[in-house]
Image 1 (cartoon, rainbow, N blue to C red):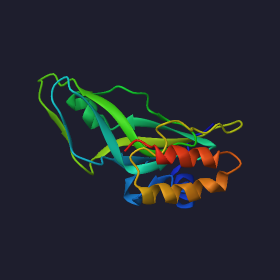
Image 2 (cartoon, rainbow, N blue to C red):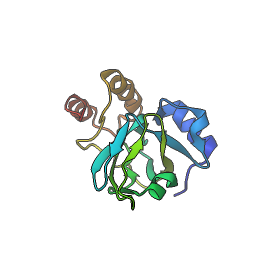
Image 3 (cartoon, rainbow, N blue to C red):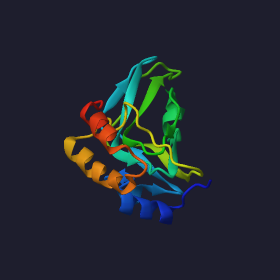
Image 4 (cartoon, helix red, strand yellow):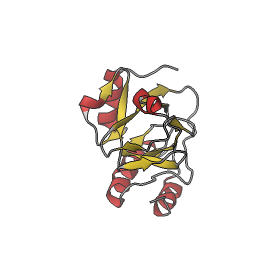
Amino acid sequence: MAVIGKDELTRLIERYKCIHPFNPMLLDGDGYILTVKDDVTLNYLEHKNVISYEVVFAPPNYVAHLTAKSRYGRLGLSFLNAAKVHSGFVGRIVLEVVNLNNERRPITIRRGDPFMHIEFIERIGKPSPYEGEYQFQYMSDDEVKMYISVLREFDSVFNMKMLEMIASRRVM
């Protein structure tokens, strides 16, 4: 297993739309910086979900790991969920956060703010892609159609009928 470098990540993004929309200016080190879909303000001790603007796809032979931008940790924002993207997952990333600011001040994250790093890691072994209820979360119908066509390249790995059913019941 190895972290994928910029050149390989760019190739994966171009071929499989691993990050959509893709902005080359957000490539960072060996990863990419995901941005925020909507403004979010958290009062002290408040818990909310922050949703990525970008759709993420981890092809069946990859997983991805997420780390928050340190600027938010320094403000007192704490991340509650595991920071992993399963192989085969397609959707917007949701991070559960809570405001633990020492001064008990609100923390605001603005639409478009750089929020989290994502790094793709090649996995070894037979693919076992994600087919859970959060597949295609927060995606439009057009985005789902686009990714269904991408997933057809892996039809020996995915149960396409099941994916279409999951897509029709996705989290909006």
